[in-house]
Image 1 (cartoon, helix red, strand yellow):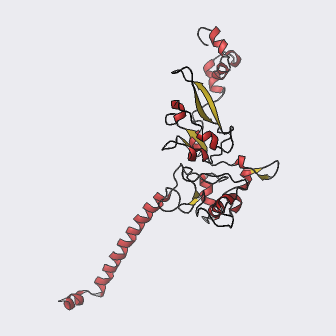
Image 2 (cartoon, one colour; image 1 turned 120 degrees about the vertical axis):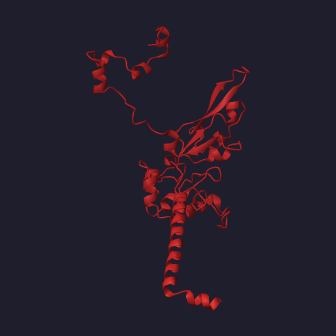
Image 3 (cartoon, one colour; image 1 turned 180 degrees about the vertical axis):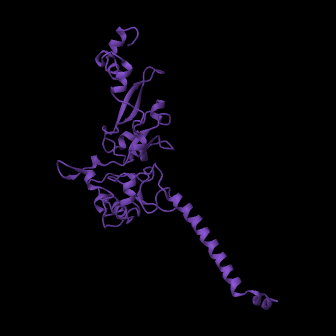
Length: 283
């Protein structure tokens, strides 16, 4: 019976069978590749190494060589006296298929391993393509690497989760910050409930914060109440509809009145509190 079936498979039938088989495999491959590529796209919350170019330029420039991650793992504080690694992994990780990051590119997760802000910033000079721009972390006055110019993101405090805003004394993030009392300050606010205590609330200065994530790592809550976001996500930018100052359309609406005779919002914001108290309308 088997021999008779084999005789029925003509070359023409085998050709079409093989073609259908290959088309099916090809279609499946395309579908898998499409899903794989979609999954491999970086999340907008991805944190890159210090001195990374803007994301689009970074992805075009990075050749996924892993030299930055290797330099990071070999940092002095991660080595024993005989040169062996205490931890096989450093701050920087090279994205795998399971990560929500473009595959093969470097990133870090502060809650797992923050950036320790090495004085020599070893990951940046190791980059062979300029995807990590050494000029961005170089002090123009001294022509030396400057950790204060590192920019990986900015820390954000969730006031609803931070126990300091509950009235419990905690300064873990403040003490962990390498730029002590600069990137994070403690703001004292009166506790009206007791009248005798003060809230010690952490406040981040985004102009100083480097986004190293040491504060996020140190946070005592189960889900960090202070966390690092890419700067463009944390701070955003003015909307396209925002109009600053006085323009021709404003003058047309004002008619014959002169610009100096009209109180603008900017001028009102410069008034002192006493000016509002002395004017019953607050105008």
